[in-house]
Image (cartoon, rainbow, N blue to C red; front, side, top):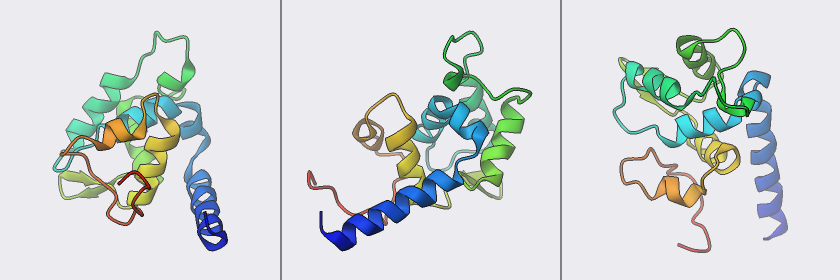
Amino acid sequence: MHRVDQRAHERRQKYCQLRMSSEMKDSELLLGAVVADLRTGMRIEDVKNLINKHADPASDDVMWQLPKDMDAHDYYRHILHRGVIQEDGTKVTTPIPGFRRWIIENCTAQPAAEAEADPTAILDPYAPPSPFD
């Protein structure tokens, strides 16, 4: 990777890491699963249902659990406030596509390529092509 590209990559990494709250870090596998499953045209209720679908209060791994004292609605409001998602009327979008991609790459149990293979996924139009494209 060229030196300029490396610095840009490092800045993007730091930017995304700073956007992550302690609640998001504590539940990073839940966050990654929800973000990876976001689809174009999803309604607010659909996203809350995704949160409930992926949250596993019985899991021994706290990264799959909702943060303490949060339910799906609270978690939705939290990730909305942190810029992971944005409301557009009754629909939900991802206002920072690079942040979405970073979450998928860094907070999921599945490879990012698998999540991006879905044609209805909300993709990052500004991401540089990978060497595999």
